Length: 79
Image 1: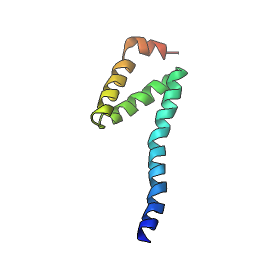
Image 2: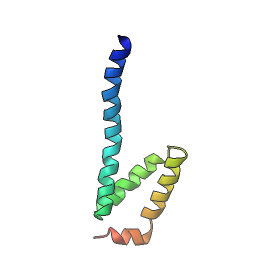
Image 3: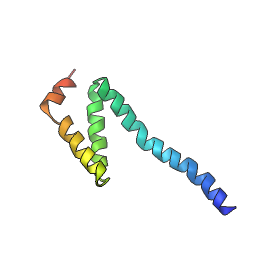
Image 4: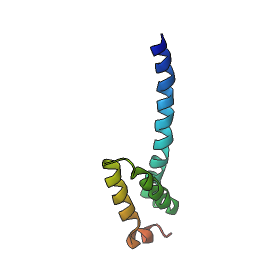
């Protein structure tokens, strides 16, 4: 009985946590595709947060920061 209650509470809680962390990434990705200037800053912030996820998040975060900080990338989003 206690296990069923724990599962019924933890399931929705985990879904909310995943949504909270996924939605900004999806919005940032769509913004990058459409080359909206604010999306570059959003993804830079998310990339800094991903640096704590060793090892894959660190590699992806470093690469994202490296790409988004280039002058050529800044020119693409300057509009």
